[in-house]
Length: 226
Image (cartoon, rainbow, N blue to C red; front, side, top):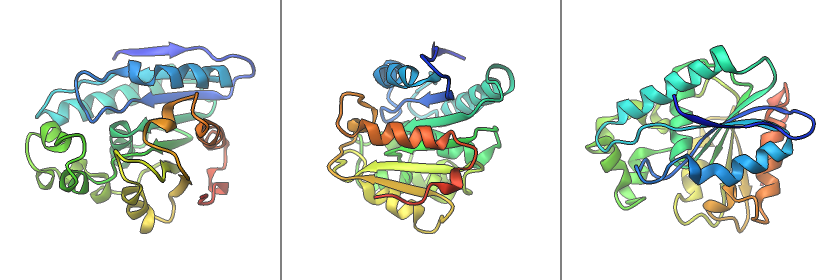
């Protein structure tokens, strides 16, 4: 397992484990989320930004590595303090799938503009055909890796999505939560795709607050917010 770790500043809030986005492409690594990691550490989180393999046509290698890393972290490296799994974009897809397959023990997870439907992402040609490149075939060939077709996550889940997201449309998250009433959706007006991981964005305080509240013992108090 490869990961970067940031120690918290001030009063510790718990541990935030990050899964970066980048449409599963090899040239986008964990540095993509480094500014976000610094900001969360400054807010009081111990931050662990996990790297994962991205080889076209080998999605099982990616998913197996993520699930192994999350198990290793929760079993050996994360204390009993609140722990939140945070995935952005493709990292959100990985997080949603992982927590639908296994019970890792996170307090909650926050999916930021996640790819919730591989089928829909394929239809929209998101990431210039990223889904077919990642899977090595059509989305229909791997329903087990499609969050919209998987079992509900085993951990309380909050989705955050910008209403002006041009890379992963908010309609995907709206459709995902429609029949999953145990999952809340926070919509951020005017926010785009990368605003959610940019501490310099005017929308960052919303993300910051959702992650902080997700680390509280009772995430059921997180009603859907617009």
